[in-house]
Length: 601
Ligand SMILES: Nc1ncnc2c1ncn2[C@@H]1O[C@H](COP(=O)(O)OP(=O)(O)OP(=O)(O)O)[C@@H](O)[C@H]1O
Image (cartoon, rainbow, N blue to C red; front, side, top):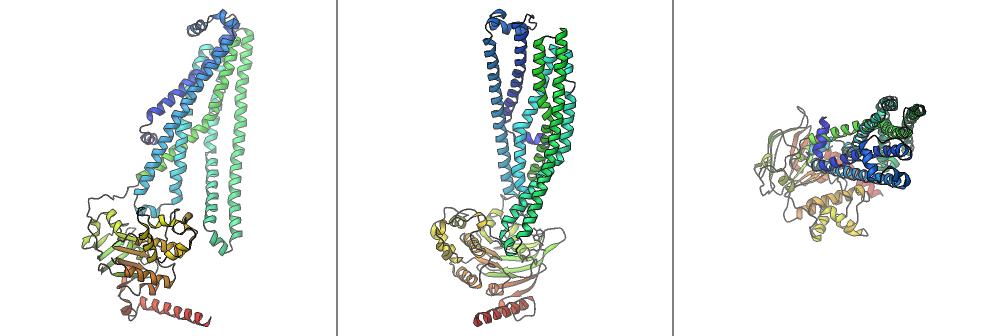
């Protein structure tokens, strides 16, 4: 019931339309019950000699010209039957369009709200959540709700109203026949509900197997380069075969169960029809009921059977819709990130001060401990250290993707926590380790933050990022379309495009989170030289594992297990015993052997 209330909330603005859809199905069911009555009257009282007992039917017959007139003009009855069918069709059309309109708009509401909410969730949520599951919630769960509203709920309302109207008419026509017509129906209904409840697991298992199959396919297609490089084709084919077989077997099991169900349910239905015809014929011959009544009952029983057989399936599917509403609610219950704070929006110059900063993702597991340092505007600072030492965590604090737990971070002497989040993010440019490019043109990717930016600015940023020459060598230059995930570009090209995209904004603080790793040393040098030559120099933070990249920084911080274990510039650090010197010596000897190799070649 709680879920139903939530659903009504999403239906805001479309409830009345939906109600009209429901009313339409109820009217169409009333009209459906009229047809057998018309046929009965024709057989018994127009063609036959039975008196008409119902005053409503008598008025209808009078309206059409009276008994005798109709007997000589039976085509009028035929035409009336066609008109009744037409009227029923109109209401069915209204039911379909109105309920679909409401369902489509409700699900659009859900999708829009969901998308908007997801955009506003904190960075932390996105890091932890599974993309696949989020996509499933936004697509198939929303689709399940749509089906529930547009089809299942209306179907149930239609079936219940039909059951009520037909039972009413049947009991009014003949109580004995009405009871006989309903003897087997409860068994059919119970069987349907019990069966579909039991195969629910089989349906789920088949759905999950299908999901596993597509995940395997997606993984294989995404990682096809790794598969080929490691000659894993056979392994991949076997894995796919296993998942494919699993899906086939589970689906086949489901279909076998369904076949048994439909066959047995058919048997029950036919038994019910058989019972009505046998008993009905017996009572007709005995003179207990009229021939027209027998014909009417035969029609009614056929109308009742199908929705009752289907009811179990519909009820099970309705259960799925409630689960989907619950899953979607989970996202809505996640608190959004407060961006529009009443905080400061200073004109940032770029000085950064860390004082005894502590930060933890999980309680009592600090990943940054007692971190203190100072950077002046325009200076370059480099972070180096083993993997997992906290370098990325440190720089993620600056654009306030996470907030520090203890100590103080000041930008231009203003406490970072007091600076507006949106504002600081506009002023801190972050080039991530794994650049993500959109399926757009190169130019659109580079001027992502401001699509109106003039071409010259795009070219200038690309030149600084050492990617301009590569771009103009492509047939369509800056208009080249970057495919899904930018697969047509090399790793280094993607990284340089991401650099161009960040530096184009001329932020006072720029962070390169290991984003020069995929470019060769010479390109790395030329990017850093170009950055240094820029007129308005940004405060630059570089994370790298390469000594040559960090060597020219004004301040180098060596991190280990979340603490700064060494600090200074390159010259001072290579003289000091410690991690920096060791890494320097290892990389230096590697460079020398590289030179030897090149000389000997
Ligand atoms: N979102 C997160 N939730 C929980 N722990 C995290 C999260 N991100 C990183 N960590 C943990 O914090 C520690 C520091 O990670 P961080 O990514 O800052 O290291 P790093 O020095 O940048 O490593 P690398 O050089 O490999 O990129 C690691 O122990 C890591 O497992």
